[in-house]
Length: 311
Ligand code: TXD
Image (cartoon, rainbow, N blue to C red):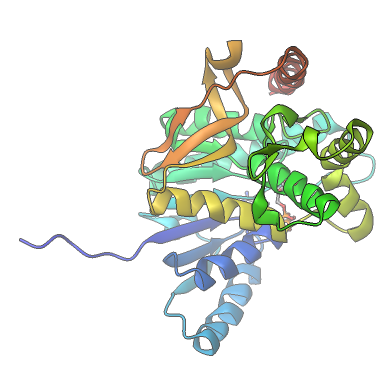
């Protein structure tokens, strides 16, 4: 008997700047049908209606629904979570952790009930703490709950290096590990221009400056936008992970994964190289780091643990 043919369903939890861009990219790249969920009434419905009018222009057959009812994510293959609040003036970092933790707990309940077999990709900040909480609250196996930050931080490193070297971005292969914060770890020893170590091509002081810019790139965008944070590139980065999963690409990319002894870390989510395929995070890849990179990774992990303690 022939197997059942079914369209993929992608649930976007949070229909703000990143959520809306994700919906557009899902449609453009023919990934499946999209459900756009948010607590704000009318906004996800409005964005979905607008996007449905883009479909005929590009000849896309995707269905898109905006909703305030979490039950509409039923049977989703993938949930991408961006729901949360940005920090407002007068709010401490701890306030933000607690506010977003409440939102993530709520969303986790909905995902567990309505999309129990989905791969969950968390984007909400503070990323490493929120993805940890999502896994804990859903009770899903750790390979099915993953955080997006490393793909974006790596892309920023690639973009700055390609600009410096005046070469195609696709000739630059880079890695950024650690927590998604100012203490992230650009791994110079594994960063190359088509196999040539960047340290052979760019002077140390310039590389130091480029890596500093990578660590502050999110803040650089915020300072320019003034009303929010980066959204095009975070959405694109999450799409790379969705595609790796849905197309079983076994792609090697940087993502926040749950450590179980790898890199000497346990019971914590942090950015490391992983293999993503149909099993979600199929493997955490352990690479040899220099002593300085190892120290930086562990310092970054300490800061993530401090946030987890607040939860
Ligand atoms: O690399 C990364 N991981 C990141 C993370 C890069 C850039 C931005 N990053 C974080 O993503 C950012 O700090 C935020 O925590 C999230 C989402 O960013 P976005 O720019 O999309 O924020 P918006 O536009 O404020 O959208 C958030 C939406 C908004 O529409 C709220 O109404 C909604 O989340 N929201 C909820 N949706 C569903 N359910 C609940 N409970 C809820 N609460 C708020």
